[in-house]
Amino acid sequence: MRMRAETSEPSVREDEAPTEWTPEQQIAHMLELCEAQMESALCESDLAVDALIKAFTGLADTTRSIGALADQLPQELRDSKHKDLDQQLGTIRSQVANAVVAFQFYDKLTQRLGHVRYSLSTLSMFVCDKTQTNQREQWERLFNTLRRLYRTEEEREIFHLMVNGASADEARAQAEQHQITHTAEQAGDVELF
Image (cartoon, rainbow, N blue to C red; front, side, top):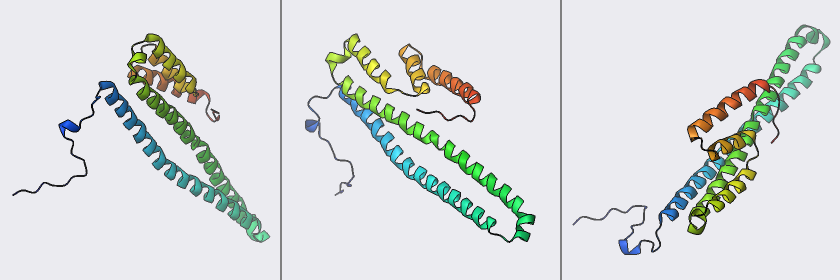
C-alpha cells in the first residue's frame, strides 16, 4: 500500500472550489501577488541599504578622527607627511560624499515602487467591478487618479506614453533615452522629488 506524501500545499477538491470564480478575480489575485513580491523585495533591500549607509557613516566618522589625529602630530612629522595625509583624507571624504549622493537613487526607487504597488492594488480592486471595467469614463477616472500619483519626471513620461498607446518597450526606450540626456545635462545636480 502506497502512502500519500505530505505536501505544504493544501489539496483542493472540485467541490471546494470558489463558487464565484471569475477571470477578473484571478487577475486581481495575480496583481496582488506582484504587489506582495515587490513589498518583500523592498523590505530586503531596505536592510542592505541601511547596512551600507551605516558603513559609509562609520567611514566618514573614521576619516574625521584620522584628520583630527593628523592635526595633533608633532610639527616635524606634519611638515613631511601631513600634506600627503591631507590629500588622502580629502580623497576619502570626496568619495564618501559621492557615495551618499548616489544613495539617493534608492529613495527615488522606493518612491517609484511604492507608486507601482499602489497602482497594482488599485487596479486589482478595479478589475473585479464589472460595472467599472465596462465603462470608458471609469477607466479615465482610474487613469486620472494614477496620473496624480506619479511625482518624478520619468514616471510621468512613461505614464503619458503608455496611456497614449505606446508599447511598454517603446515607453521604456524613450524614457531611458530621456534619462541619459537628462543625466548628462544635470551631472552633479541633486534632483528633489
